[in-house]
Length: 227
Ligand code: ADE
Image (cartoon, rainbow, N blue to C red):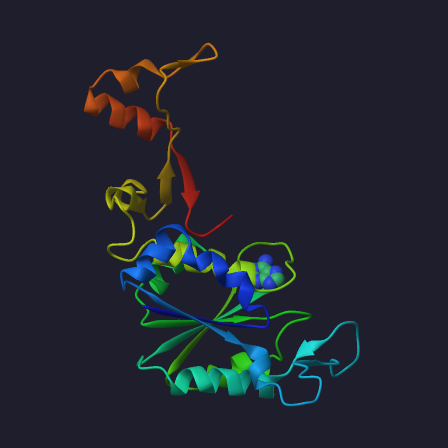
C-alpha cells in the first residue's frame, strides 16, 4: 500500500519512521510519501491560502494549489484507484469499519488542511474523477489545528491491519469483530499481586473455557459506528 500525505508541515510525519510502521516500510509492506504543498505555490510569498469568499474570519486553502499537488501525486502513481482522504472536523466520524475498508486500498492520499480548511471545490472535483474515491473524515468532535495529526491517526489504524505488520497477528483476531463492534477486556501481567491488588483468579486457572467466558463477560463493546 502506498500512503501519501500532502501538507504544509512535512515534519509532522516523522513518527512514520518509528516502531511497527517504520518497520513495515523497511520491509516493503508499505511505502510512504510526504509532499509539501508549498512546492506548488507560485507567488513570491508562496502562500497557499486566501480570504474566504463571502467574508468572515480566517483563511481558506486555495483549490488551484491543491489541484496541482494532487495531480502531481496522481501523475506519478501506479495505482488504479486513489482513495483521497480529506481530513476535516466536519467530515464523517472515522471508525474501525473505515480503517478496515481503507486497508484494502492501493493508495491513500491524505489531504491535510490548515486554517479554515481547503476550498470545497477540491473534494467536489475529485469526486467526479473516475480514478478517485473521496472521503471527508473527522477523527472526533473537536477541532485540531490541522489535518496532520488526524492523518497519522487514520494511517496507524489502517497500517496495523495490513498483513505482516503486527508481530503477532493473533492481536488482530483478538479484537474480535462482529456487527456490534469490537471487544476489549481488562488485561493483566506479572506480578500476580501488586500493591495488594490481585489478578482475577480465573486468569491464573489455566482453564481456557472459563477464561474466554470471563473475558466475554468483562468486555466493553466498542461500537464500530462511533457513539
Ligand atoms: N482537522 C481539524 N480538526 C480535525 C478533526 N477533528 N478531524 C479531522 N481533521 C481535522
